[in-house]
Each structure stands twice: as C-alpha cells, then as structure tokens.
Image (cartoon, rainbow, N blue to C red; front, side, top):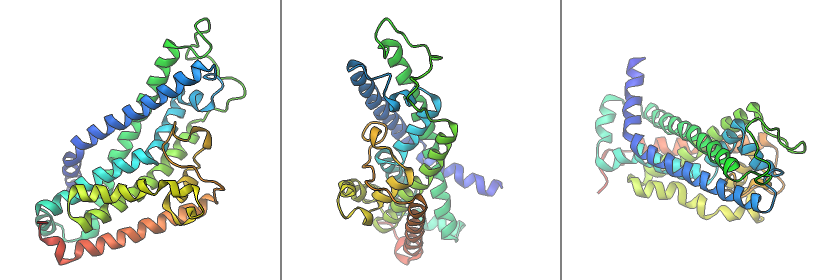
Length: 287
C-alpha cells in the first residue's frame, strides 16, 4: 500500500501549486458571475423567484453548480492545465525515462496521473461550492431579494414554485462531473503524450473543445463531444452561462447513450496515449 501511495503523493506535490492557483481562479470566476447574476435579478425584483439563484443559496445547490462548472468550460481548463503539468512536464524535461526505470508498466503510470488530476478536480469542486454558497449568502444579506424591508434569513423557505435540488441531485451531478473530468483529462494526456511539452499539451487539450463549442447549436452537434457532455450532465437551459459555461443540448438524447459515447471516447484516448508513451520517441526529451 505504501509503495502505491508514495508515488501518488509525489504527483500531487508536483501539481499542488498550479492546482491551488487554478482553484482560486475558478472559484473566483464562478462566484463573480453568480454575484452579478444575483444583483441583476435583485434589481429586476426576480431574485426570489429565480430557481437557479435560490438553489445557489443552499449547500446542495452550490455543490451541484460547482459540479456543472467543472463539467463545462472551467473544468476543461483545469483538466487541460493539470494534465499538461503531471504528464508533459516529465516528457519535456527528460525525466520520463527515469520514471520508466522504476515502473515499467506504462498503463499504471497513466492511471496514477489520471487519479491525481481527478483528485485535484474534486478538491476544486469542493472549494468552488463553498465560495459560491458564501458569495450568494453575502449577497442576500447585503441586497435582500425582496428589498430592504424583507431581509431573508438563512432559514427562510424558498418560494413555493421553486424546486430546490437536494443532496441526491448534488451527488449525482458530482458523480457525472467526474466522468466528464475524466474525459477532459484523458484528452489532455493524449495531447501531452503527442506534444511532449506542457504548454502545447494544455492548448491541444482545451483549445479544440473550447473553439468548437458553438457547434452544439448547429446540425453537426451529434458529432461533437460537447453535445454528449451536455446530454450526460442534463444541463438546464435556464442557468446557461450563469451556473455553468457550456452550450446546452437542443433535443438531448438519452443519458445512457451519452454515457456510452463518453466512456468509449475516453477508452479510445487512453489506448492512443498508451501507444504513444510506449513508443521509443517518448524516451527522449523534447528539444
């Protein structure tokens, strides 16, 4: 057990600093957007009736929103940068052959790095959820949803027509977000194995998906991973570009089909990554 945990600790230490910086930026971006969303709704007198904002004021709703953020554009950036650091850094600096001397099973090294990215992604989700909930609660105190004469206490019930997510909804969103993060991470690992440099790996991992995101709204959507991610996460239209940054799916298919597509795509990327890392080319530092 110790022989398995020690290398994981080393991988986590390698990515801890960039992960901390990225987590702060992601949580800050999500919170700032939520605050502007709340203030805009409060100005129009819609803060109490808005289901998305009411959900963010609950711990479960904040966790669900954090999962949506990490299954969309913010999670893509996180996985791309962390994936580039944990794998491409060794390939770029030339330390990968030394690691191979102590661990000849390339697939185990890949799994280890994937686990590290997912672990740091979970920590980022937890921090983002806490920051989101805190930001909305502060907004409700400073700018009450019903105006200054109606200061809502934390125990005040939501309007009867607003359905608030429970912990079951939040847990399901987090579990689904882990699969999407796995897809993002495997895409970046494949890019890192091909590019053998941190910055190109991050750009190739996040760039194509970010640039082609608008294709979800076209007739080509069923051929893009964005479509299947939105279908799998069941992203609601009402909170698009507020509680998550992604294009929702017009006419979403069955989530079972989306699960199969994402799992198959991740598996194919892992196979390609394994072949690239087992090639002799990976044993020489990138010049």
